[in-house]
Length: 150
Image (cartoon, rainbow, N blue to C red; front, top):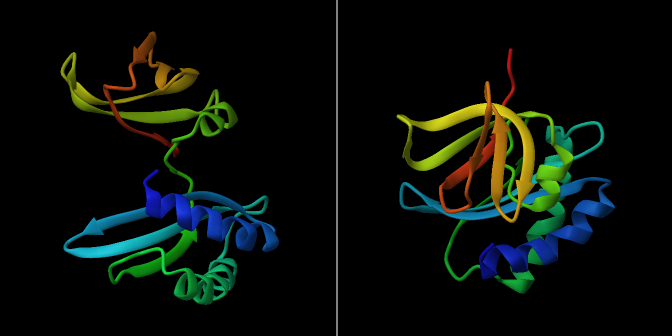
């Protein structure tokens, strides 16, 4: 998490908790030349559009006053989603036994994408069962996301 994301996390956490929700992630990225600041939320009953709007409206004056982002940006608040990214150790612990998609920076045995059941997480290394256990090091992993099988 970069400095801007950490600052926004600290500003948003009490607002999100007061709304009865969980702050899943903060993202500050550039896409197609435009900067985006995004809050991703979760909740016991999920997150609907009204909840996102309430948090967005509550955050607007806080972000205006604290001014943690030096550039112009688009502010978005949304659900973390069913196929959310797993980043922190607690994320992996919470979803142990779930189906995940591991994307790698480079091919390993002819594939950059691996799908399986999350069976272990240790210091950034991830082990999945994909017809046999496969361990990926933190350095190999580009991202890990939950995967919904239909």
